[in-house]
Amino acid sequence: MIDKSEAVAEVQMVVFRLESEEFAVDINQVKEVLKMSRVTPLPQSAHYIEGVINLRGEVIPVVDLRKRFELPEGKRAEQTRIIIVEIQDSNVGLIVDSVSEVLRLSSTAVQPPPARVAGTRTDLIRGVGKVADRLLIVLNLDKILTTEEVILLDEVVLDEPLHK
Image 1 (cartoon, helix red, strand yellow):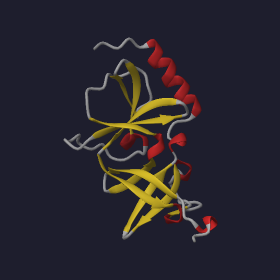
Image 2 (cartoon, helix red, strand yellow):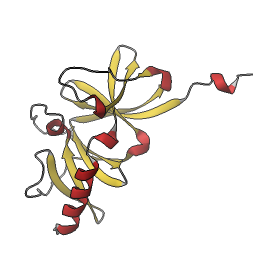
Image 3 (tube, helix red, strand yellow):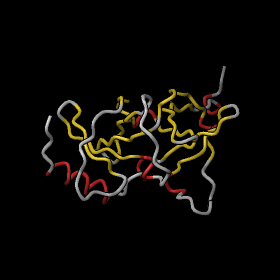
């Protein structure tokens, strides 16, 4: 019989790409994955806020993760996706280059992020997952947007009429 204290917890992650890097987010925060669609721009919003989409009557703000992470702008392709995630009780869309898989990782395969890396905002990283010869950057979605940014987005979305 296996001692329950020795059982290794597993986490399910949605894996996606930005540039040549692989990132992962906890599947419990992912609502759905959409093909890239038209995003209505929001005037005077942060540079990384692409705009809003109408998803079954709900207006959802959309963040371009390339811009948020200050990566070079890439071409949108057939594989470009919008991942709808829950951040601080709000639904937010994240534009990524592609979504590759849903992966089960043992909690021991996720190491804490490096303490300090010059030029890196390690608060955005929950950990680094090791899968065979791959390293996945596990994001802390609650840090992608500050509380103030989430409140601002909610206010802008409420003020913004969205045409179908």
